[in-house]
Length: 148
Length: 148
DNA sequence: CGTCATTGCATAGTATCCTATGTTTATACA
DNA sequence: TGTATAAACATAGGATACTATGCAATGACG
Image (cartoon, rainbow over all chains, first blue to last red; front, side, top):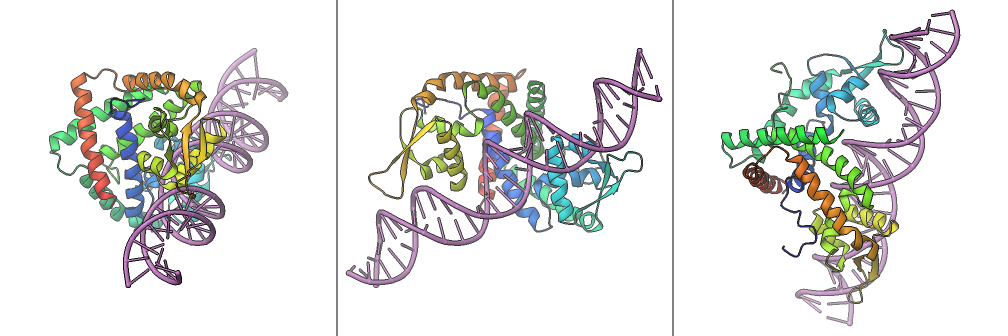
């Protein structure tokens, strides 16, 4: 331990990357049952109320770069989760909407995610979870600041 | 907000994935100055004291699957960060060690990471950081449990 | 009205991660 | 000893992320 040349094991960053990887793996396994994947969640969430959004609006909402969203939407279209229709107002753009099949599976997906979050905070009081969320929010604000 | 079909924005998982992605991006940018990448940290850390380890030992330490470690080591070898020598005790295995160039740059890399962790917890007291680490540790234990 | 910057998207290339599978070597045990 | 299991590694292929770049359509402004 003390001879570790980095001594950076007990840092928030270390735990956060480990948890993120495990959560993504677990989420993908559990969501496969309803045909979703964890990377698709921001898109499903944004379109769940029937709205139609462009690729760039989705990228901004999901906080990913545009080519990342392009690939994600291509896979989702291939899997029948979304449709694209040309935007009559802008010939560069298409409007993305959820397929009926995807929308019908959203409640099941939401339940799976709620359970996963409960499992991940097992043994923690509501106050502890609230504290954790508060601290994470402040870290996120800091790293967003670092990004510029 | 209340009309969000998922209502899962204010969950630990949501923040943790966002922070992890931002931290990785920032870490990669800052570490590029010394020729490292964030994914290489577990390997650099494990070998920094001059030890030699096999690919599977490194995979276990870094908590990644074996093919992931194989690819990572291939890139690190290509970039001159590590050497591989055949294991005289086991013809299936090779022993991985850090190059002198990599070892000499470790102190600079460590300083960069310390600073990044300080930046990410800016505005938080030592007690708050300790609380955050404690809560994250418990979440990590939970998700590791979920993984089986 | 024409030029020019901006915006929306596509493509290419790379890095990390995963699962599934195969090959070779080592080991255990009937 | 011979076979079966286990371990170490390689390979293939997919998902999710990034940067860099290019093209076409839009919009702003002299």
